[in-house]
Image (cartoon, rainbow, N blue to C red):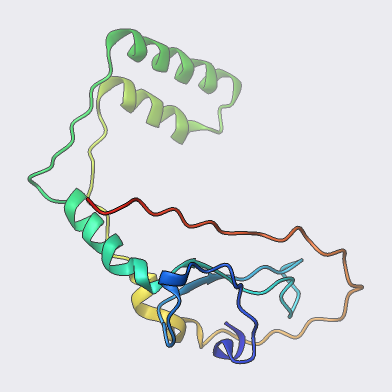
Length: 159
């Protein structure tokens, strides 16, 4: 965040159980009207609180466990539909070869699942972006304000 967030008004819609002081691993969304703006169009939104880090890491560890292998299968009718869709897309949109290959691999069962990697962008923190250059662009007329984005947190009760 600009100036490490000092003096910035943060969005006050953060749930009470997630409000903590000194959460250096919180991930914020910063909204600008255009990419060249040097100011924010609204206060930064907390989109991934540090309070979710342990639960998220535990979830990834659980789903990547070798004891919980998930194998999928597609019935014959669905397989034919996927192959027909892939064929039509390849005729109408030849540039979408990756999508066509994905649909064909779904139909034939050729997708191999890989475990999800660690969340490295959280570990690196704001220090990873400190080397970015400071671009100075000319002034533009102020555009109209965008719609204000909102984040709603939904949390399942513990079992």
